[in-house]
Image (cartoon, rainbow, N blue to C red; front, side):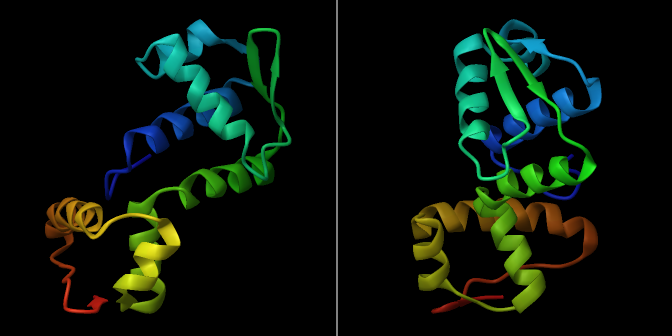
Length: 144
């Protein structure tokens, strides 16, 4: 799932839950979902709630204490994209690929994160980019 860069833990957990439900094609109890993400039931419930709040979560449903994803491949990809859109790391990589330069203040404001968090993500990103011999740089007002 995150072979080239590490996503934030909540994003990883939401993607794992979605992937588990999509590929199993059956309902899962909260206990089974918690086990699949190596977490407790309360955290699994919070991750499921976050998924349900997304715009393309029409086919992600809860009946009593069971969760199910009943969508096809297209709906799975749409919901997966919604989850990834919440990730500052993913947005950073995505925008760098598209734009090659990012205005720092605009980026920080759009994701509502601090410069400290951005620097932490850049450090993590650079560690992973070493494998492909690339590096990102933070200059005064831009990120390249």
